[in-house]
Image (cartoon, rainbow, N blue to C red; front, top):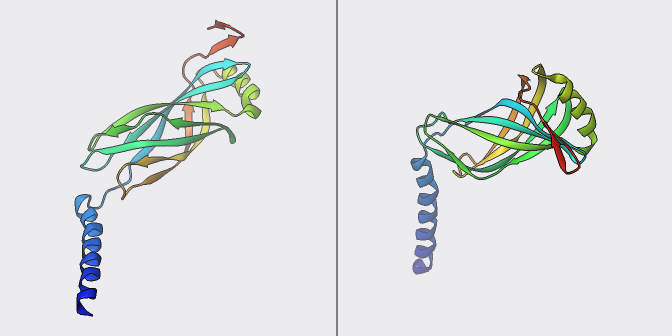
Length: 168
């Protein structure tokens, strides 16, 4: 009876040691900060509108944080208009920050109204809300939610496509 108990005890002890070992490797990590830095119109065409959202990821920790990917949703002036995914993974240096460009596609329902607003906006500020998440490759941090609101100026001029030709 005793010989049956020992393997289970050793397995349970090993499992508990492995789990607690992760806590020793990454003691008390803080979640990274995520902030929208700029929005610039990229392309306006009959097929839709694309915006470039530049996002800054700040790492308050003393170790580098590998980001696997993520997704953002953008509201402008209180209307959900766009969504996009962070492309390739990247690493945020310990105590540093990383700027990431995310191309978001405007949802079909808001394309025309947004296109008109963007063409009129010039350099004015717009109210926005940014939601979504980034996935961190360190299990203790996992998926970090994004919930940010504010005002930000539109920058740059969009490329307007009419069929196969482009007008800047």
